[in-house]
Amino acid sequence: MSPSSTTKTSSSSVSDRKVIFDHPTVSSSETLVELQDVSLRFVTYHDKQYSLKRSALDLILKREVPPVSNEFWALSNVSLKMKKGERIGFFGFNGAGKSTLLRLLARIYKPTMGRLMVKGSVAPLIEMGAGFNPELSGFDNILLNGAMLGIKPRDMRKKVEGIYEFTGLREFADLPLKYYSSGMYARLAFAIATEVEPEILLIDEALGAGDIIFADRARDRLNQLLSKSNLVVVVSHDLYSLLNMCTRGIWMHEGKVRADAPISEAITRYMEFTQAIDAKNAAAAAIKDMANKV
Amino acid sequence: MKNVRSVPSIPHAEYFPQPPRANPLARGLSILVNDARELLNFWPVLQNMVVLDLRIRYHRSVLGFLWTLINPILMMCTLTAVFSQFQPGSWKQYAIFLFAGQVPWGLFAGILNECSQSIIGNEGLIRKIYLPKLIFPLARVFTNLTTCVFSLVALYLVVWLLGPQFTPAMILLPVAIALFAIFGLGLGLILAVMNTFFRDTTHVVGVVLQAWYFATPILYDVRNMSPRAQALCWYNPAFPFIRIFQQIIRDGQWPDLTLFLAAAGIATVSLGIGYVTFKHNEDKLVFRL
Image 1: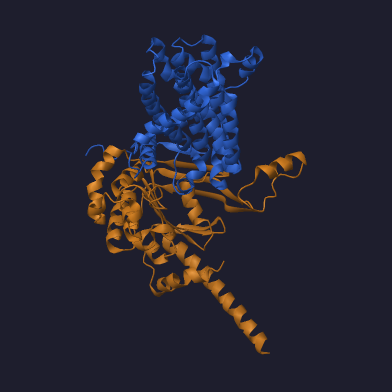
Image 2: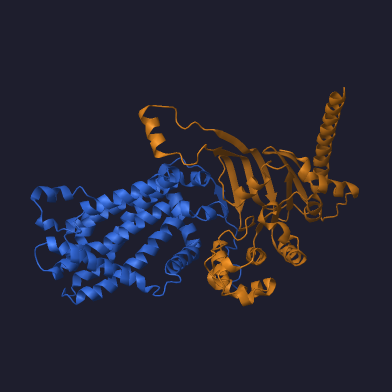
């Protein structure tokens, strides 16, 4: 895992600027999300199909049950409280558990240990277009996807116009989704995902959303959504965006919370850390270089 | 536009996992209530899935939905043509008899087959978005129920020409169908979990279903069997269900109370075990996909 590749570009842009922190301090009110000592274990099996044959043999020969090849804690002992009105940015190296945490909040994973409390409706902008069916028309997919996000078809029909408006896909409404270009597909997914009016908004920049989120029109729409939600949780490698968008920063490192502070402070600490690592790497490279020369 | 915010506007705190309760009965009850509420919330998704599934099934075929009707008719013709040779009595009677057993078995086999695929087949969804997992097997059950009802009606119209009369006992048909579907759902839930853990299950299910089909008096009449063989039939959990259908459709009688109680009992036990198995493993499924 090399952290430098992903963080370098953004870190330089932040360090160039003086850190300005001008968000209104939000009065701490109701807790909407609470994680108590949450841990999540992933088990990867050698072959996912732990076969009937093998388990039968295991049983008969009284062998040790599955040789668990790989288990690691994607999150360990994370305790957090997220309050109404907060805009929280998660950052850290790849594999630090940021996206996993988001999926946990979206209820895709359940904690292995500890407890999670979520109050209110959650809109995940994590994997957009997850429920799309390529055989169905754009219109049908809008209704289906809406239903999966908790919107009744009746209400979703009212939103269809708005979605066509934003995506410009009205004339393709009856076309099966498999004939859509990937750009059209992404636009539609994004438009549907942002039609919900969530209390808690989860955004994962690293997955799927990518370029579309940062197109101008999409950004406007996203900003509207941000202002409407009670709680926003963003995962990103783009520290500059986080600095603008968020009030609170959480630095995840190897499945643990390494820093939890106002966004500027958290980012500063994270950058000191990455710079230290960069320096160490540079020093190591230099020493190696010298050793080679000698 | 008053109802735009369809998501519950009163924040409802949800806990994962549920707070532990000392009393296992209270715990079980809270799980049940929770599931009921979730299914209610996600009912439109289930509806959508069923409708879409039905639509996609016959998508682009010229006859479309008619296949639900034509297919069983053709199947029945073939079976009647072949097996009536080995049966006493007229082929017409045999056709009606066959119809009484074949259609419900189609429902049952369909439910088991598709339920066992329901979790694996929706891997893309399960890994990306939260939906109550029960939705997937349930959707398959409803899809099969719909096709079953259609083919039942269509076939009945055909068979009607051969002479069975409408009888008051037929009002029990929906109950019989529901019971058989519940039995199927219970087993289907177990299979869905098993198949996710052991992918070999798919292959076993096909073979076992075939064997089960022949072991159940669908092609042949129990009444022509030796008393010993008839007694053996009672060890076959699918037997009471099929027998109920045969009594209602072929004989035009009210089914025996014993049969009905047996069927209801088997369905309940199956659903109970299936549900507990499913809930117990529900959260592990994501990691096994």
